[in-house]
Length: 222
Length: 222
Image: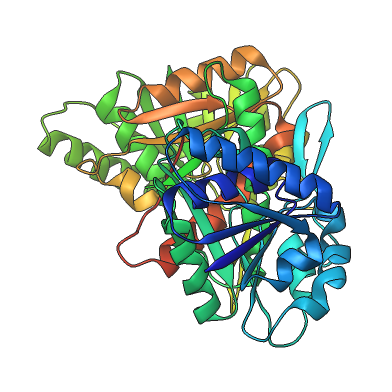
């Protein structure tokens, strides 16, 4: 597979890029609105992997060029950029490509973090509504702690929930997820089930904030 | 402690009653709108515990009489009965008693189960709004599978999230929760953080429904 991580210079995108490059033989492409920034980050990741004895080239591109070279495109961008990002890359997507949505809307008040549910129902739904016809959308990787994902010495041992309305696309993303060591992918149904998954992310932040010794939390369903 | 489980004839209330009677020395009282039904269930639990070599009497009462005898009152009733139940027992509550809210609103459509967020913000908030002054409200036990809780042979090994705006009341409920073997209580902050916790329950149902071999799911934060 050729996986483009749009927003791959950021926390969750960088973590997924490193894990896929380290644990699998998939081709990893870093995308950013700024091609130069993407190249710089890609070089950092390549150096990090080389220091661990993994000889792969992670390449960086402007978002559209990264999406054009990939068959799975992960939208690791802030929720308020998701719609624009899909629009900007739409004509670079081919029929059969899969768009993956890991973003979640959060707002903070004095009590903690809360789910900021978009009018469309979920961020994953925003992506599904914006996706060109023939391109399937899958929600996944919403509830992973970026710092832990980015640290290749950190064990995961957690689950990620996969949602989507096309079973083939879900299987593709499930296989990609389970290629990462210590990550189990569970089926949580269709995109209509996204809000409860996206809402779990602020809850993880609240739990980490309120309990000493619990940081960069993930979740295991058992 | 004297713990009243209102709705203790139902699934989650019965499970908590059995676990506390089996694992701790707290006095467990079963409440129901129907005193006769409460007594019948209490006898069933007593027989079940006796068959396991635990010699305790679980007693059953009408809700108000159960609440009157307890210092911790768990509202294990459906979410649409929570307000009425608090009203019905209000004058039996003493200052310093703690009300515990485990209920969550769910609705089902063709895709699965979804969180049915009450207008007040959460079921826990409904309880807090209805509680008499001097009685603190704590949310806990939202995300436990009733069948697993009720089966004393089933290992738990899962977490429950505790929320509340009074630290002493939270500590009381945290201690009660951790008296149950295999249950870890985590602090998730104030009652304003309830919606994301209550929304986790329908998600657990959706995951169990979509993955063979996963039933009566709980969650561990790790």
